[in-house]
Image 1: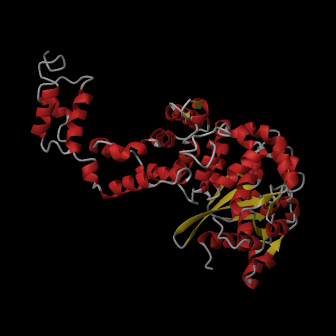
Image 2: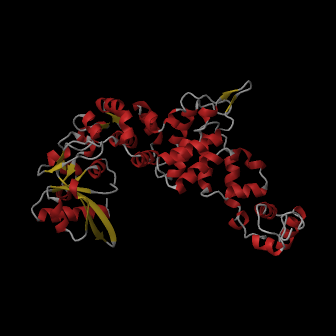
Image 3: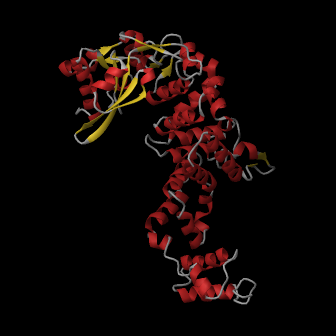
Length: 460
């Protein structure tokens, strides 16, 4: 397999450090991925060189975490800029904030460095020079924590005392879930017990860090497994109580033979591929979040009257709490707001259908509807109809240049006001329906519906 630019950049850093008499190795997730036969997304380097040495050795560096021994080294490989994290071996003091050590002590010992890390599968080092000679990552690994054994057995296990590891950084609990889901591993029993014991303390982690970790979980192709583990360890109740509330909320079996809302949501998550857009993934997770609050067992069947509107409010609350951007919040809320509209798609007026297709990133709405159907009654007829119409209607038919504009109304003698929007909508609907084909026809239609001597015209 050809080496990536990131690997070449990291190898050059190791080579330079060793030429100056320092120890240097690949460290962390890149070693794990290489042993699994996966291409690492990035490469980190661990060394006994102190941060000031690293800063002096390389021409382009950024001391983003020099206090903790972390320096970013920038280099250009074949015209591509690569930034590599270089960390000095260290041991950590107490973690009073549940995220960072209060103090660190730099070390010359790679073994001392790895025992402070999170999980055994992330605690291995690799000598790239040995790898270059042998071609076998297994022969180049330094493993002081049993990482290779856990990798082979399929376990996510905290290094040392799991209670201590999770007290040091509470986010590690969510990372354990993510790694177990991503690699289809089990969480080692003592590590899982520690997560259960510390689950309530996840509230000490910033909302942004929780959001980012959850987003990784639902976009890496193992979302169902991740949420089953979140639920089993008690973390789901802490980070997303609104999703935890989906449990045992019954649904009408004629539409949802699969079971309750929680089971239905898990089935959607199962269908999210690796690399799915974050907004679509969150839309799938939250599309029925309004059902628990609107559950009603009516005489004829179970109903969820208003669950879409309630769901939109809850989804927006979650997005605000987790500090989503305004743009992402709007798209996630739109997915929740519109997911039931496909039920009417064959009966929509042409103008309504075209406006429906104008929704930003409509392909995400279409895909949410598809996996929603496949996770319940499995009838894709409405999906196929909407997809065919969406893909065959030319863009100029869905959103053509307006025949009648606000300036046209003003020129025709109307004063701008609250009813302008209604007037323009009447003209545009007729245009989308194919009932008018010119500005004059549009103005005639508006003037018939809103006579020029009504209270809204100029000079009235």
